[in-house]
Length: 176
Image 1 (tube, rainbow, N blue to C red):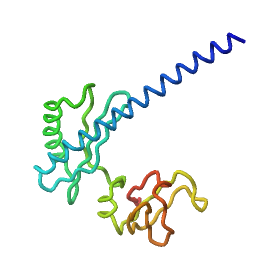
Image 2 (spheres, one colour; image 1 turned 60 degrees about the vertical axis):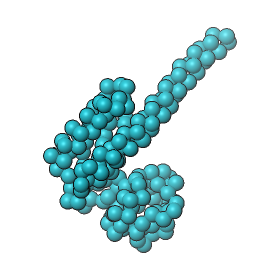
Image 3 (tube, one colour; image 1 turned 180 degrees about the vertical axis):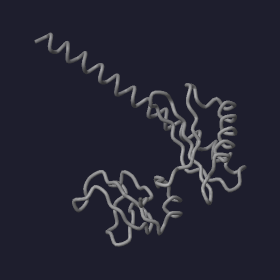
Image 4 (cartoon, one colour; image 1 turned 90 degrees about the vertical axis):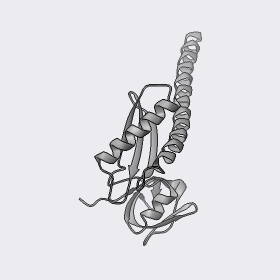
């Protein structure tokens, strides 16, 4: 019996260590996201026409810092290169990141995720795909024309308002 408890406590300590390490990674990523977003927002002001869409700092095999930019008519390779060079120099100067990372600057893509209030305002009237955490009326996903996002509810044309705490992801819909 004592062998069982010894094994259990060893297992429990390892699981706790893994969980606490994951929480530290999440905290670090959130902290970096915020600092880089502030820096990138200041840089965007110096580059007319560009818009900062999102910043992600994620640990995959390595650390990746992904910055998504856009402009009317879409960004091109030159926009991404110019922004990447400028933000890279600022990040090196500010020493915000202690670990080696891969910097990626790109467009959010045709099926961009809508996350911020300005995204919902800009994309009003367009068709979106909504993924839900749990089914509503037997469906875990809904496609509809975006009317807006007011308060804690997402409004789609012809649908009941969807509570935002039930929404896992909203993306622009693409017809193939």
